[in-house]
Image (cartoon, rainbow, N blue to C red; front, side, top):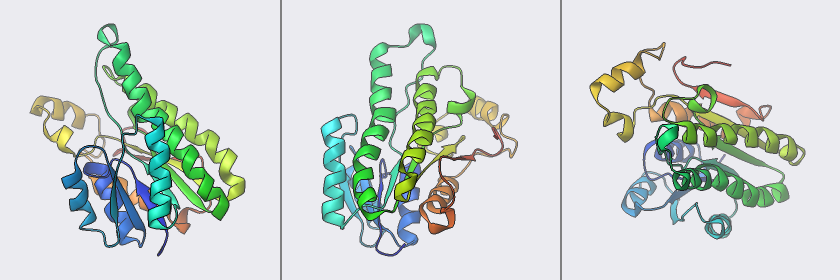
Length: 242
């Protein structure tokens, strides 16, 4: 993969940072996207030779287009897009706010559509590309209090299956990685009782590590996955299999 360019969104921390580092170790030139944590994005770049940080608000359509154009121009192309950035707003349905749903749709789902749309153009010209979208186990199973979030993640799966069929003639593969409960800042802040309840749903009896997700993303970015498209790799410790 030496010389190829990978853009990872939401890469200043957590799963995104782990994906960026894994792709850098695999030989990619990595564009590290961030929205509001420049110091953390630069810290990730310091671990990846040849990487650069790019700021953009992915809830804005013009910013999505600008990000793709800037990365392709300044990094020398674009070969892999990892749509990792997203937000979560949890609320039971009777109290759910339409404005919150709009934010989730724009950030989690519409940005995936826009970035994939704009990234597909240079990928079509070079007849090689990988689009990897981060879904979630709750997009398949649902989860109380996460109807809005689950809807966006389920939408990503349907979108990915569709573009996989459209883009296959151009040598572009599109797949999803669906994490389960992963050890991040968010899960680390949960009360112990909540953690125990979550662990009770995981057959492997442990939370996943961000490196577990990054390994799946790295595989789908490589030539080892050249006959896989329109698929979802579930990385959830056995919570859900299909």
